[in-house]
Structure formats: structure tokens, C-alpha cells
Image (cartoon, rainbow, N blue to C red):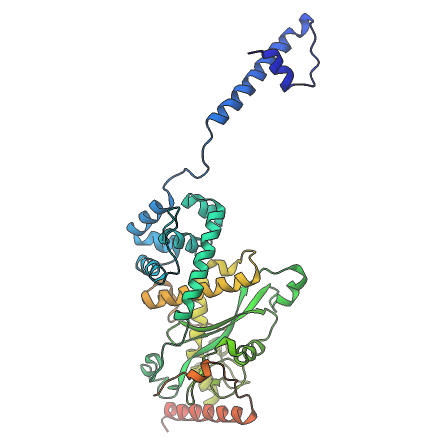
Length: 411
């Protein structure tokens, strides 16, 4: 090997001389050139793949599912039995399948839940499953699409006859609220949008968010959701739009049945708000145990039942941490992600009734006979917003409030 030529190639700006005084410096540079060359050759020979630490993805999943159930709960935010059931459901419906490169359905769902539920970055998930970030992103998207397709079979009214057990089993609620089939409210979920429209999405708390309208039943399952509205939009505006657009398939209740709503929504047939200008939340009472009259007492009972949707939001956001820090996806994909989370929420509620998060939120108090749903209404009837409809609903509310107050007072 011609060391001098190597030194010339690696250090072209060095002026070489033949004087004896430079011999030591030349020797040092030649040694350095040799070491650099040897290092380059060694690096080329010892190239290692980036993802070669620990278990491969399918092995990692098997260790989690066959190990301590707490690991699955902490890493994927779902019980082992529910995880396996979800894999079987999406596979049997042909929404997901094992890939040609060997990624199993379990591995794909594991990556999705790691990103969406646990809130891990895709780079971290890639290291954990020994896959590239591009692979993780692709399969997270595939699982999201599969859950959205499954959502049409899971996000719909399930209690279609009789009085709901939650109402029938509580003498404080029955028979007064026997027509109640659920609750409606909006919730703010973080959104990432272009700077030119960011202010439209900024809500009254100063956060950039979208206002998502949700309907839930008394079992803490979502029966309808409507995404995409700016955080600055009033709940009533989102509500009217959701009902007016036939393609949304809003599940309108039949006569004699209704949803409980808060004071932001109109009082009309099928939707019962509390009395205005009366105390509502428990925090409004400041420890006062008495009631001022039938309106005050009605608002208290109304709040206790309608609280189910606040608790449902609590479970959703506690489980899916990505909803509190949305990544920079396109706005449409962010809406699909919310739909996927709500679908998985309902699935867990159906398959794991004793899920730890539902148990934690079941009784938590927060401050803020015939079919119950009409098939014709589901296909897109417009709500009756006339004064006559409002008066009819107000009369039903008065009748419930007065009879309930009389029963409490012993008259």
C-alpha cells in the first residue's frame, strides 16, 4: 500500500517538504491516514440493521398477550381478551389480514394501540416492534380505516325497546325519566390545522380544537358522532347542522322518547334541556342539600342522568391519549382517528364490561315501551324546531318535574 499517496489523497491541502524537520509530522499524518482508511473499511464490513434489538414484532406481541395481563393493559390500554377479540373480529370481517411480509393482525393492532392509546411516538413504536417508522405509519393508518369501517356496525343505537335498566333500576329516576334514551353534548378535541384557519378553530379557552358532537346511551356507548366543526362554533349550531344533513343519519327518537341535553341546546320534541336560570351542576349547590322547588330538583336529577356523557368522554380521553395531543395529520384523517377511537371504545365496552377505566368513571360526578328509535328518522328527517314543538317538550318537562317533586315531598 502506498501510504504517501493515501496521505496526499486524504490531506490535499497539506504542503509536503523533504526537510528532516518535517519527518515526524509526516509519519504522524501517514499513521492517521492509515487509521482513517482502516476505519472506513471496518465500518463497511460491520454494517448492522437499525432494528435488531430485542424481540421481533410478532414475538413481542406474543410475549405481551401470553404474559402478565397488566402488561397489555399498560402498553395497549386494553385487556388481553378484548385485544384478541378485536383481532378476530377485524380478521373475520376481512377488514385486516396478515401481510405478505409477515406482519400479523395482532402486530398491526398492537402498533395502532401503542400510538393511539398509549400515545407513543411512531419512532418509539418502530424501535419496540423492530420496524421502520414508515411501516408503523402505514399500518396505523390501515387499522384506523378498518376500525372506521367496523364503526358502522358498532356506533349505533342498541337499546331499542322498553325502559333502560339504568332508569328502571333507580327509584329516583323511574318512572319520571322512563322515556330517556341517552344524552347529547359536544367535546373539544385537539386539532392541527393550517395557520390561515387556526383562529377559527380556537375555542373560548384559547385552545385550537374541533367541536365534536356526540350522542351516547346510558351504557356509556357512543351511538352517533359528528366531527369537523371548528372549536369556536356554538354547540347549538353544530347540533342543528348534524340533524339537518340527511347523510349524517342522526338517530332521532320516537314520540315519547328523548335525549337529555344541556342548556346550550334547544328545547324541542325529542330533546329535553334543564330549566334555565336554575342551579344545575352539583358544584352550583356549594354543599347545600335542600332544593328550592320542583325546577331545582328536576335540574338536579337531570344532571345526574345526563352526567353519563361526561363520564363517557372521560373514559375516551383517558384511554386514547392521542386525542389530547393530536399529530399533524390532515384534518380529514384526524376526524377518522376520532371515529376509530370511538369504535374501539364501544367494542371494549361490549366485550369487557368490567374494564378498569369504565369502572373508574362509572359513578364519578362531574361539573360541567316500543322502539326508542325511528328507522325513518335515522334516514334523515329534519327536526321540528317550531314554537309548538318547543311548547310540547316544555310541557312534558313540567309534568315530569312536578310529579317527581310531589312524590319526593310525599304529597
